[in-house]
Image (tube, rainbow, N blue to C red; front, side, top):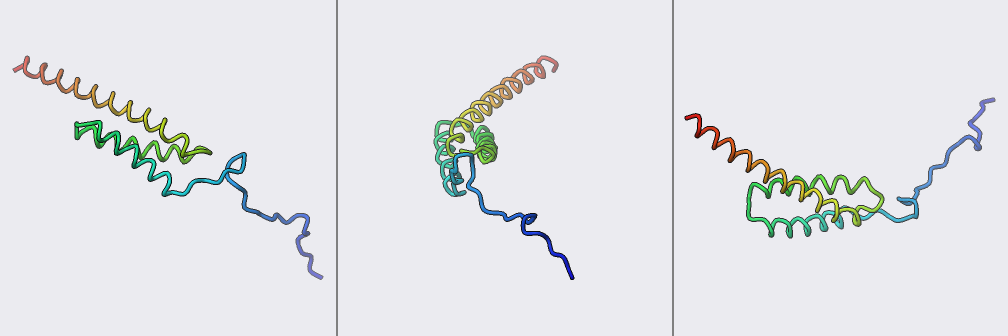
Length: 109
């Protein structure tokens, strides 16, 4: 006689709602749409095309990080603003360093 696994030992997996309070995850389109809306506003405020690439990278990174939270649609706007601020600071600093290095090169010639 074959013995089968006891029904008490079997695990029945049931789909669980996401998050502690049962909130469902937003669909990809909602988060992507929100990211695009905020990114378009940030790009419209910026005339520097070099900064556009940095802002796009910041938006992609913020969207990825927002997915790791239980409420990505709520977290994304603040996170994207912080990433955009850091991208602007970095671009400004790089421009200052480029200018300073040009001055140093002109002094050595």
